[in-house]
Image 1: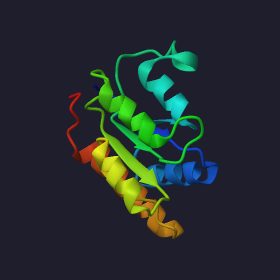
Image 2: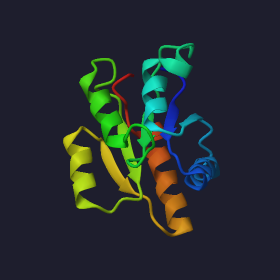
Image 3: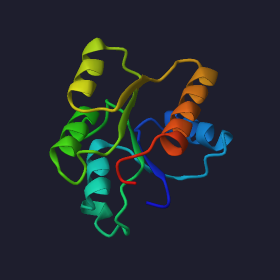
Length: 145
């Protein structure tokens, strides 16, 4: 995998803009593909539906996945990824506004690599996203390599 990329699964347009801005601010010029619900995430990752013609064999380096999503929840997306041999090792970070203990536990029980709560403070949110991007794209060695 030569080009490390991110799949951002986020239905909140303000959070999406902030995440993209934070990644650019730390000079992460990697490709970021954005989908806005859980079904789109599954279609993207499994090359189905509107993404059936998506080219290339590479999965994204990291999936940043919100829990509260339209159509298919983030936890259901995670369960599906872990149940399929093609995606069972796909790194997934739950990036959510939820502060619920049950959401954190369910995320880890279903195979999340990390659970990160979106900070309410703008600067802290940007810093958190920047650190995530640097870690997953520059430091971590994904299973696909």
